[in-house]
Length: 323
Image (cartoon, rainbow, N blue to C red; front, side, top):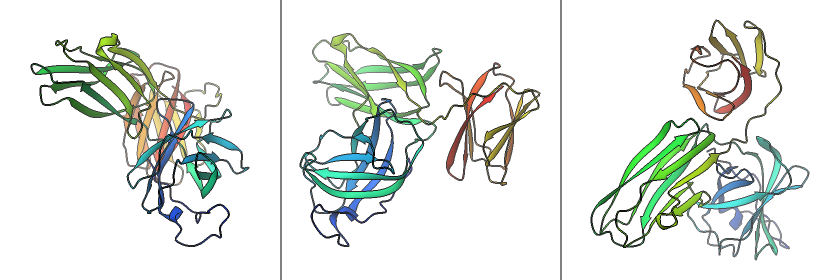
């Protein structure tokens, strides 16, 4: 996730703007679309000042001061650790970047405006979203038990597998995984012992916004999706095999010929990373050429429309291509 710096001196409601206000010490770690909920934005912040900011809530505005997303109060204050906040998207909204946007910090359940942060907010995460999978028993387990956790994609391919060992001393285990956009199923073993209940969770790194369940509820298998809000899909007529695609505006050129995808940077910049997804959101190709031009064999892929993502100078550029 990209770090976004506050570009505006904090403003206290009804008071004169002063340097070194408490808002100067509120750091915006990241602000991105929620990977597991298509109607939410995830904000991660921390507060290095002594001000507590009682009952805070955030609002995200565009350049016209229209409210894009807002938070329902869920915290007593803002501490000096990274803290995740969920902003619900109000009107229909989908954009990679909010240009000239404002992030407002209010306190007292929204009664007082404390801070205004002005910046261009990049809402797109990396090619995969980092998640935390966790298992926790409600009490000691009589004997050591191994709980297998499996995540499969929409084609039943295993994309994650881990064995968690719980016993009379270890009640809690967790692990991280990174998944590209798509539809998935998570499944875990039930405990052999009936003396305790096993809870599981799959959540974003800072927020408990994912899926949760327990073995007693017989929901040890659940389906979920990783949302990709950063594709600007355009209708592109299928080109001839040697037609150049203006796939990446002024930055990248792409051409398909003889079952080969040819990609190059128009400014001779490095193609740091190239990822190709099918329309179901499944990652089908992942390369890190680190050259200004790349030749990629795509003969193993079926003909059709794909989503290509290329990273140049740390910026992801997305477009449809036809193979």
